[in-house]
View: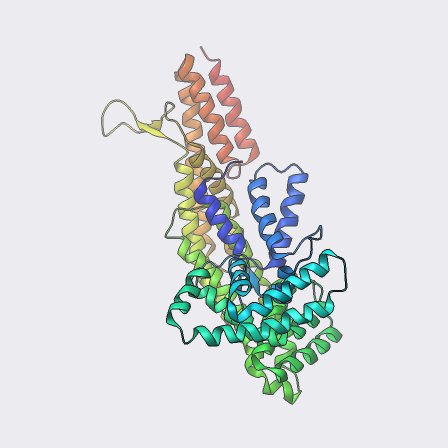
Amino acid sequence: MHLSQRKREQLTAFLGSLPTAAALKLFAALEADRIAGGGKLPHDALLDDLRRQLLERGAILPARARNAKRLFFTPFEDLFIGKRVNKKRSGRIARTSLDPIWRVMMTAPETAEVALAAASLDDAIKSESETRPLEASLFKAAEDGVSNFFAAIEKDGVRKSELAVALNGLSGVEDFKEIDALLSGVEFFQRLQAFVPSAAPSLSEEQLDELQELFLSAYDYSPQIGTFLLLAIKGRLERPWRALSVYHHLARSADERVRDASDAVAALLEGMIEDLETVALGLESDCARPLDPKTAAMRVVYFADYADGMTRRANRVGDAAVVNRVDACREIAAEALNRFAEQAVSAIRRTTPVRKSAGSAKLGSPRPDIAAALNADILEDGKGAGKLLARAPALADRLGADLSYAHDALEDGRDWMKTFANDLVFEIRAADGAERSAARRLLDTVLDVAEPLLESDEIGLIRDRGAAAAVAV
């Protein structure tokens, strides 16, 4: 299936915004659907983008060749996102910043020792020598060198401006500053990764207790390191909303040390709520643009999964405050879904070209325009819109929305497509030759779009009527 450039860009932006664990899950589901012969999704385009982004994140096998650059960024990878869509958020470092940051460290005079340490590490890797002491040397050189680098450019306006250009904007500079701040505590992130496997499904009570001790050690070393360690847990787990169990474990701890670190614990919850708000506001923003039904459905489902996961966990411990905040985000997403449903009805109507009947202007009604040509984008949008409409009531129910809007939109879409298809049967019967053939082709196209909206026996009956009309004399 072909994706237009506009849709490819929108899809890439959405995939890039997903945490690694969520992207891995989506990748596996798409791969399984393709192997099973699913033909309704643009598997190749989706998998290409996901494969590229997951490879960039170092998240999938086969194992990639080790090098100094990859080893340097690995401890912080649970804070990485594929691509920044909106504003810079604390504890979310864009993958697109990593190459420019590395180039700066390899070329700036203040980080010359970093470049030398990286070269030594790369040489040791190539010769299959012991690398752990050299890895430690790389992080130590970076801790000193990057700190000196920022101290130097702070006094030099020209270099500050040049850095912003080199790192693709001020957000890239902020990403670099966050890595600088975390370098002294790299050991804590390495311990987290050794303790919690990537995409871990859940944590036991014993693991939560051990994680609490690791957090307290990090927080005692540096409150900022401790805070970012908790934020990294969201990216470490298979599903980010499962980090809510970590929040509740810490927030309800009787340990005075945890209470003294309540600001970091609260930051974990705020990060999760901000995840939900970001997706919800992104859906709201998408309503002002032309509908891309496939990515709209994916994003609504992702939001609903995240919201449902947080709500279930909050309800288990009676945390009404979290439930209320999640519900506030649901309201935004529900309004967006209603707008998507309206746009979907318009999208499927664009697959049904009409012309005005001959005769009286008052009596003449629109008829199918069998001579109209439909481009691939219109048909692709229409098929996706039909699927979105068919799912709208279930999605609305998950969002706690007023189901009447989704049901009304679905009925509008069904009625329109059914009426148009039946009108096409009349056109087939009335036409002959090339026009009859064109009308039959249009009927096939319309029924393909209508497949998610109409019952299979309805579609079968219309096809049979069309076939009978095609041989009528």
